Amino acid sequence: MTQLPESFLWGGALAAHQFEGGWNKGGKGPSVVDVLTAGAHGVPRRITDQVEADEFYPNHEAIDFYSNYKEDIALFAELGLKVLRTSIGWTRIFPKGDEAEPNEEGLRFYDKVFDELLKHGIKPVITLSHFEIPLHLAREYGGFRSRKVVDFFVRFAEVVFERYKDKVEYWMTFNEINNQMDVNNPLFLWTNAGIQVEEGEDARSVMYQSAHHQLLASARAVAAGRRINPDFKIGAMVSHVPVYPYSCHPKDIMAAEIANRERFFFPDVQVRGKYPAYALKELAQLGIVLPVEAGDEADLKAGTVDYLAFSYYMSTVVKHDAVHTASDSMINGGLKNGVDNPYLASSDWGWTIDPHGLRYVLSTLYNRYQLPLFIVENGFGAVDVVEADGIHDETRIDYFSKHIAAMKEAVLEDGVDLIGYTPWGIIDVVSFTTGEMKKRYGMIYVDRDNEGQGSMERMKKDSFYWYQNVIATNGQEI
Ligand code: BG6
Image (cartoon, rainbow, N blue to C red; front, side, top):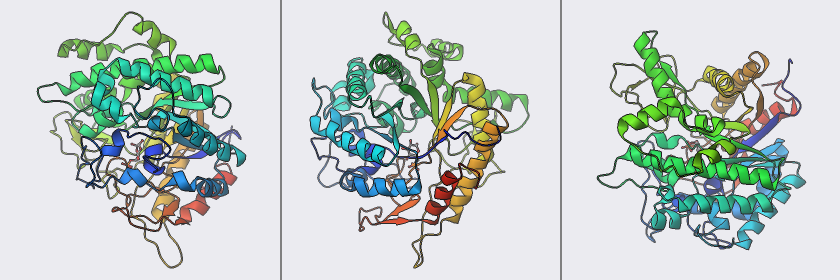
C-alpha cells in the first residue's frame, strides 16, 4: 500500500455541548457543563451548584448550531467531509437522566441533523457521552459514584442505538474517559463522572470506584449495541498524551513506563475486558476496594470494544527525580515529575506541538491492542485574526500538514490499521478546558467572542481550502 485506502474516513470532530447551544430548548435539561463558567489559560472554570442567573455560561449558546444546523452542514459538505464526529446531548434525550421515557423532541432533533448529514453524504460518528452527564444525576445521585447511573446510561444508550440504528454505524461510549486520572484538576472528575470530591475524601479512591461504574456502563452499552445492530462498530475513546522519558537513565525510562499507565488504564480494561495487573497492585497498595458485584467481571469481558478512538494533541515528559515543573498542568498535567520538553515548541496555551508523537502513539496503541484505531481529535488551538482579505491561519495548516504526514507514515510504513481522521473543532467552538472562544481550532471561523458577543457569522479560513484539497486528494497533497 502506497496510499491511504479509499475507504479512509476524513472528517471533522465536535461535541454537542461545545457547539449546539440551545441548552434549554426542545425540552433539554441542564448537563454538568451547563454550570461551568468561563475561564482562561491559567484561570480554571468554576462549577456552580445550579444554573445561576447572574453568571455567564459560554456553553449555553455556544455557536448555536441548534438553529443553524442546515447552513453549517452545508459548509461541512463543501469542505468534503466524509464523516462528522459529534455527540448526542444526553440531556436532550433524558433531561434529568432518570426518566423512564425519553424526550421525543430531543430525539427528533438528532433525526433532523443525521438526515441532513446523510443527505450530503456525510456519515455521523457518534459519542454517547462527551462530558454531558445530566446535572440532576450529578446532584441527586453523586454522578458515577452511584451504580444506578450505570443503568441510566445504558438506558440512554439503548434508546439512541434503537432510534438511529440505520443512520449511525460508528459509535463511542465515553469521550476521553481517562482525563479523570488527573484527580488534581476538579474539571475532569466533574466532566467525566459528574463528581465533586468532598472534604476528607480520597480523590483517587473516589475516581477508581466511579471508574468501575463507567467501565461497566461502557461494556454494557457495547453489549446492548451489538444486540440492537450487529453491524455497529462501537469504540472506546481516550485522550492519549504520551509520556516520554527525559533521558536514557533507566529510572527515567521506568518513570515514563509508570506514568503511561495513567493513559493505558481505561483502554486496557475496555479492550481486554479485565483490570491490568499494575492497577490491581496499585489498588491493593492504596487499600482501594472497587465496587465489583457478581456478574460485573463477565460484563466487562462481554463488552470489549471493536476499535480504539483517541485524541492526540501533544506529548509530555517525566524525569524521575524532578518535582513537577512542566509549565502547563492542563490535560498533560498531574504528573508529579513532569518537566518541559526542550525540543518542542508549545501553543499559546502551553500545549506542545509534536507531530512525530502521533506516529509514535499510533504505533504504540496498535501494537498494544491490535485493534483498528481512529484519530477522532487532533488540532491546534490558537487566536485567529480576521483581516480584510480573510483569515490566514498558516500555523494551523502547518500543524495539520505535519500531523497528517506522521499519520501516513504510521499507516504506510508501520502497518497501522487506521479507520480515519477527524480534526477537532472543524468549526470554532467553545474551548473545553477554558470555556474561551478565542482558543480556536476551526477551519470555519465563527464571529463570537469570550463574552458571548458577535454576529455568529461563519467565515472560511485558509485552512478550509487547504483541508478541502487534502480530502479531495485522499491525503496525497498535504
Ligand atoms: C479534548 C476534548 O480534551 O480536547 C474536547 O475531547 C476539547 O472536548 C479538546 O475541546 C480541546 O481542548 P480545549 O480545551 O482546547 O478545547
